[in-house]
Amino acid sequence: MTRVCLIDDDHSVRDALALGLGDAGYDVVVAPGAAAGLDVLTRQNIDAVITDLNMPGTPGSALIAEARARWPYMPIIAISGSPVINGRDLQDVAREIGADAAINKPFRARELAALLARVVAARAAPP
Image 1 (tube, rainbow, N blue to C red):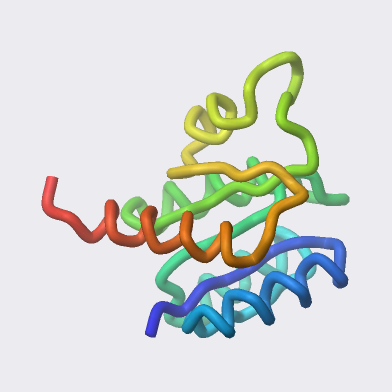
Image 2 (tube, rainbow, N blue to C red; image 1 turned 180 degrees about the horizontal axis):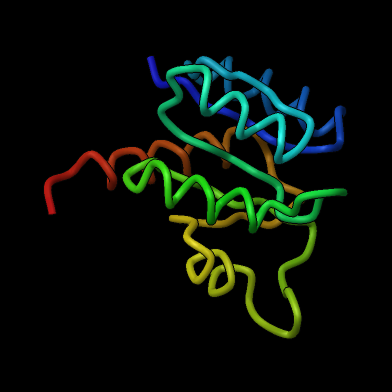
């Protein structure tokens, strides 16, 4: 079973996505922010990361950069409430900061689960 660290400062979003991903067969560990997320990644055996980009304190972009540096093959998905960041497309920004994919809120948990399955499979495939 794929163990996912889900990082979002909005508890209602975090709880709803964790429930939906759990229903899709993922083992989900949640964190309320980037610092807590990095702590989870360091202390637990995590297979993939899903993080919000816009959080108070340390932004998701910094978490992605740190995770990519420490775990270069970790599947990472960025989520955001905005399809455009600083005038640029979310997908482009996410890839530039090291995420494998991005999805714009609002979305359904099943959409995120399907994207996660694709990202995990792509990372598992030989180069």
